[in-house]
Image (cartoon, rainbow, N blue to C red; front, side, top):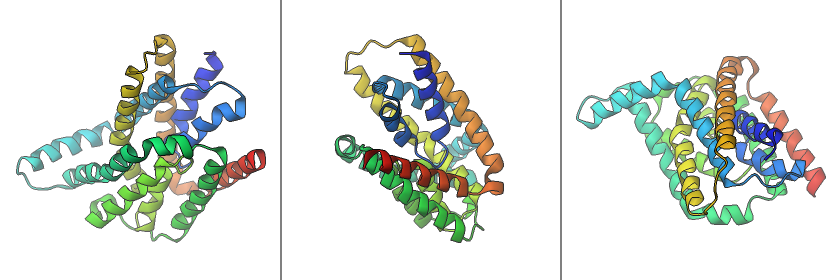
Amino acid sequence: MLLTQLVAIAVLQGFTEFLPISSSGHLILLPHLTGWPDHGLVYDVAAHFGTLIAVVVYFRSDLIDMTRHWLRNLGGGAATPHSRLAWAVLWGTIPVSVIGLVAHDFISEHLRHPLIIAATTIGFGIVLWLTDRFGSRVRDTESMTWSDIAIVGFAQSLALIPGTSRSGITMSAALAIGFTRTAAARFSFLLSVPVIFLAAAYETRGLLGSGVTPDWGSLVAVTAGAAISAFACIAIFLRLLDRIGMAPFVWYRIGLGAVLIWLYA
């Protein structure tokens, strides 16, 4: 695979995984729009591991505290904000895990068309704008309830449809129930840790059974590129979020969806 293709896959996955614009949609569209051959499962796995490294490194202090307090709570200790957040991430991951296992083949076969991506890109972009515009934006993650976890968790399942955006739909759900932009983004990014791990593990399982001999140098390059770009994306996004809001991403989604309809309708 050409160096330009490797760079494109790494940077595209790294930046779109955590922005509310859909990484899966962009990766599906890449061969459609460039004429390149489909990059294949092996590079998807490498790019996902890169973004997983980025989010774990960026939130390492939070994840260490959450794990330590969760283990204490599991052993009978008192619940703390860190342990409750850890439980929220774990419980919030269950819906997408179950639905993903059941619906994976159907989604892969029927929901990867560019016009479907166009519809979800525009539709869920409008949802993002509405929740950002009309949400009260007064709550943080310490006020999270079981119903909040269920709402965000089931919303995350919609991201199985290409073009939806996992970060976009989880932030939309969190904003709809009154979270601040920063709290919504932080919870969304923490939720991504088990989801990306499970997705990468599932893809790796399929890869091991395919008999493909990987080009390890290219895989390391994609993983490193995705990790670096994803880390930069998280840092920049969280720094600018309160200042710029969600509007730039909404307009981008609408523009991208319009281009896709023009190209493929």
